[in-house]
Amino acid sequence: MIGEAKSVLIVDDSSIVRLYYREALEKEGFRVDGALNGIEALEKLLVEPVDLLIVDINMPKMDGLSFLRALRMKELPIASIPALVTSTESTQKDIDAALEAGANYYLVKPIASETLTLYATVLSGAA
Amino acid sequence: MSIELDVSEEQYRRLCDFLYRRTGMVFTESKRYFVERRVIDRMAAVGLVRFSDYFTHLRVNALDEIEHFVNSITVNETYFYREDYHFHCLTKDLLRRRISENPGAASLRIWAFPCSTGEEPYSLAMWLLENWPPVDSYNVEIIGSDIDTKVLRAAREGMYGERALMRLTPDLIRKYFLQIEPQKWQIIPELRESVQFSRVNVLDIAETQGQGKFDVIFCRNMLIYFDDASRRRAAENLYESLLPGGFICLGHTESMSRISSLFEVCRFEDAIVYQRAARKE
Image (cartoon, rainbow over all chains, first blue to last red):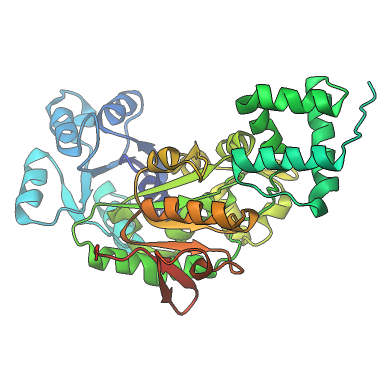
């Protein structure tokens, strides 16, 4: 990666998944932080914006789509942070719902680490 | 304070009977020296100088004191990636079978029991992260349980010396540990969060059922501590803790076939594993 390291916030309630994605992304030079749900993610973004969000759909407290809708409605620069939604749900309906909520791209789990880092690179503008 | 430990054969037998009734653990004459050393430790800890007084204390404060006593007696030495042929079997065969037989299941639950100071459940989490690509598509729950509250505290803290790490590559140590001191490493917070710990007595069905049902149970080198009756009861309780079609891995010197006929024997390339039948007959 050329230039300053891009930052990613992984929003997923599973610590194993956050760890799995973090390992893959850090290996490619990203700076990575994690949040357990949408509420925690919003709190973190208000303190420190990032270059890319990786967002799971099914989470307690605030799920991924509610989080994206809430984020996109804000009249702040963080409202336009690119978001990659990751989910085990694979129907067109699920994908459309995520795009409508404000996702920029959608990947179906399981996601190979090379695929994840490739899309993270493209979406964060790190290429 | 000088501790007098003049234990008659009769007293030793009564102590062992008592421990057996309360914990299912069997101590024979050959363990006498070992048991007596632990008794002396505990007498010093509670400030009693005569064995008969300590035995009374043990019976009167059974819940508390027996826990301390068991804590001092169980041998808790282990290391990461110990007997890893079961881990190979887990990712190559067991999880694949669980998933293909339960399409649509969102979660996978794995139980490390007894977990001692946490090496095994953390090893499981690391192994899955390293060797099982679909790890992000399931809600993987890893639970470590033990009867010994002292080891559970250590497990939650996740602090280890060099010996425990001897089977791990430098790459794994760099990824999953923080070096705290020259000879001390701590599991990184996210990995610690990936494992839950709980105190469970395997002989108490209410406690084992309280943990829910599992896809795979690792119960290695625990049943060897029990006598036949307790071993059978433990096996039955573990059977009830398995989902239909779930698997249990025992230590390499242990055989479920000699303990209970509830399970089916499955021979995989890397290990022999026992299974709860997928459907009720």
